[in-house]
Amino acid sequence: MATLLLVAFHAVVVRPLLFGLLGWAIYHRERLPRVGPAIIIANHNSHLDTPALFAMFPISLLPILRPVAASDYFLTNRIRAWVARRLFGIIPLSRSLNSRERDPLAGCSAALRAGAILIIFPEGTRGEPGRLGRFKSGVGHLAERHPDVPVIPVFLTMLGRVLPKRALVPVPLLCAAHVGLERKWTGDRGSFMTGLEGAMAGLAGEVGALE
Image (cartoon, rainbow, N blue to C red):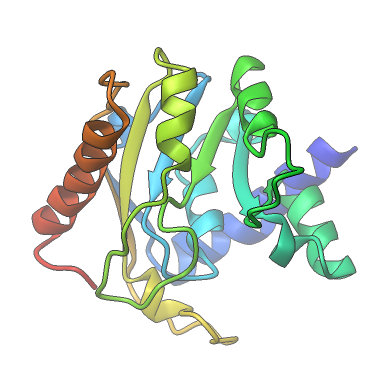
C-alpha cells in the first residue's frame, strides 16, 4: 500500500506540477542509472529538490529511490514524518554527534545492498541560491564501503528561486537538472570528495553560473 501511495502521489501531483508549471527539463538524462544500487548527489536550495529528483526517473524506478534525510527535522513532527516516510520513503540519518550511535550510515548501506538508488544532498542542508556549500563526508564514507556503486552528480537550477528556504508559495519559473558523469571510489576519501565538489562546480559552470 505504501508503494502504491508513493507512486500515485508522484504521478498525479508531483509530475504535473514540475512538468506543467515549471517546465522541468533534464539534460543528459542518459547518464542517470537505470538500475540500483547507485547514489545521486545534488545541490540543495529548495523544498522542491527531492520531488524534482524523483521526477527525473521513470515511474517504475520510484519504489527504489531512497532520499537520505535528517531525522531531527523530518521525524520530529507527525505530519512531516508521515509525508517523508510514506510519500518519499526516506532513510533517516542522525546529524547529532552521539557517541552511542553505532553506525549512522547503516540504513544507507543496507539500502544499497538491497539495490536502492540513494538521493543525497552532500551540503547537508538547504543553502542560499547562488552558493555551493562544502560537502559533508558521509557520501565519501558510503563510497568507501561500496566502491563499485556509482555516484552521479546532478546540478539543479532555478528551483532555489521557485521555492527557496523559508518560502511557502512556489513562483512559476523554468527549472532544470543537469546530470554529470558517474564517479567511482578513488581509494582516498579526500581526493574523492574533492573530485565530487569539482564535478558539481563543473556542472554549475556548464550552466553558466550558480543560481
